[in-house]
Length: 263
Figure (cartoon, rainbow, N blue to C red):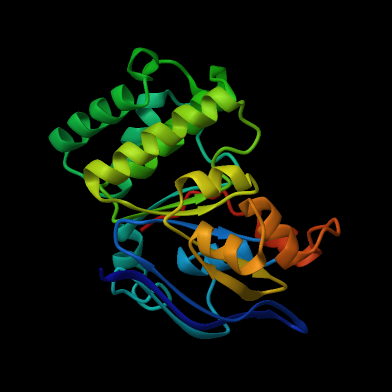
């Protein structure tokens, strides 16, 4: 299976602080890949570099064969993203949010209308297409963001804490949507989450980052076997420790990224 994401010796420094420290890993086409770590471990900084929102200090990235630092438009056309922070326009309707996104990606009008209808039906929001997003619940907004992420048929969907704060029923529904799109369209899913049972249930492979370094990679079973534990959560705690982490000031700055960027 070919790699759709290739990371080699990737580093990001902020003056004297190293947020990401020479990490190397790959993601295969069509897999669901979980990128896990405690608060402040370097997850969001890494995603920002993968999605053209930050430039690496050193190292290399290939997204669907493109370097996001030098080939931004080609890289951006290859992926969709669901941010950790809300990024919809609350003053627009569900349909208008998707239509605006489709226009940014220069999807032709007829195709855009068909795709919006398909995806809004898929996430069960077609009957609310003309409602302002500010009246939506958190779960409905997340479903709409996922629909938006799939709008331009991306090769990769980045999900930064996609189910945080959602009730178990909504989380299960969202993962049903995501697994179905992963299967039907072959979309590669790159996931960060603090829900270990979620990662264990859906992931093909997992990488764990801590203090800016990759400290373990493999399937859930391989990580449990190597740590002699019975669950991914136990393996994660054994690898990263049980001390409560606070996000660093640098990472708090880096997480303010729910911006609408232009191609």
